[in-house]
Image (cartoon, rainbow, N blue to C red; front, side):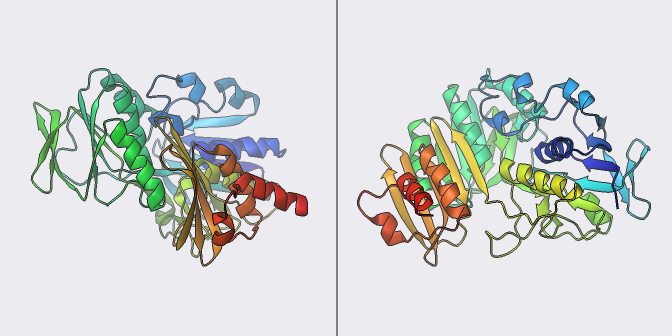
Length: 412
């Protein structure tokens, strides 16, 4: 059946990309992009890094200028969706407007997990997810003296590095025993722990937040569960996200840690696809369905859905990869290291230039490269091509990942 009307809910990376890819694939029907933020779609990763440092402005964040959407006939609606009427293939917007679709793409993303403690309403407490969040933080950075960051994940540590670079005293509270523990190996954690310490950032491990303290409506500090208090005039939390799957759940779609999709990113309704941070999907790179929060995943899933809607169906099999910039450190990760049982370290921990090769049951499953971009590119190719590499081979004197990858290409 020919599809002439496609509606996309969510105007982030995934939503924008599926609209752009549909036009690139030659789709000539109507495309409507529904988003709840003003302005054109924009990149989120720079918000916690270059944007806060003043290295890029708003215009540089935009995927495309406003005229692109007019020229490519991508209609934009600023608003929120109240409900999906699957029987009539309509969206009910909170404004009362109804929007018909022949195929619906849900790219509703995720939202910050908010600490459940007293004081969250105080002025000076921020999450960091949107341009509005970043603008609010940017206005405070010039005056702040002490910042407390809740969570030592990517976002929390990216902000900590920015704040420290701007001369702000920074304390980070982390419930776990090392930074970025859910995403990286212990070796990589150690490199970043030492780097942040050298920048003056104090990370408090095994500490949970009991309350945010304030006076006259403004934050003045935080209280730890241990009873200790830390002064602060700025508090930023980054303790993970929750998928915005409620709309799908209320419409009767399958939801389990996100909107459940099949290998082609279709939901339990054949007229509805879902992509990006909000979906739980089967992956050849994971032992069970996963949900990923990454630009790569959003872009590649969007392209997969656009191609399917244009008559070129294929399973989504892209290799996951991620990155984070903290100070002068750039960490790039290829693959998923969950459950790895052996590691090989290339490079120098002291110079903060390493690649950690993660093996599971004798197979290379992920590579974490810090300030070694050539290793990262080689790792993506090696893992995607399922080239066998043992820990013993990688441990041999003089082994180089880039040279090994090049040799395997020449051999084939």
